[in-house]
Image (cartoon, rainbow, N blue to C red; front, side, top):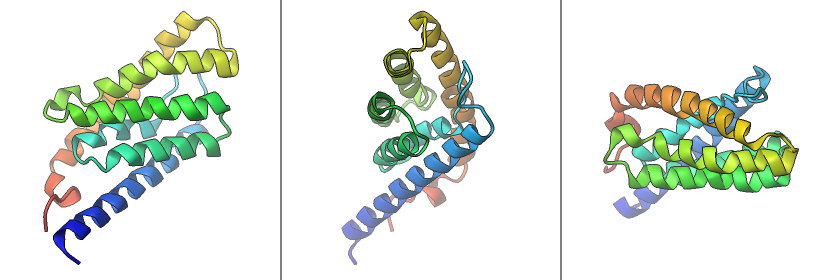
Length: 166
């Protein structure tokens, strides 16, 4: 297998691992009751910093979120638009990868803007302004605090965890 094929396989495996981790962490947060309160803290959202390290995280996060939303019984608008919010956040995290401190900002913004409308139209949660506040707080905790802690922990072993060449 040549280097180009090896890179493709590596990225596919990384994407699959990110998706699987996202699903497992979502189920753990659900079991602990952290994903059903006014301020939702999904451990899986800490993974949204991974596009800072590898482009493979972008599809991995999207697929992980999509499958998590399906498997946890979310409403169809949540499955679609919640997953798209994660995809948008992941794409922009990858685009801003040169700026470490901005890694959690795109998923925080994408979810803070999109998810309150999902909560309103899919689940009837009102008032909308309160959802903007609670979703933003939850994303700051999940992506901003936990995500950045995760980023700094991974950065120490970046070359071993996210190899770019063989």
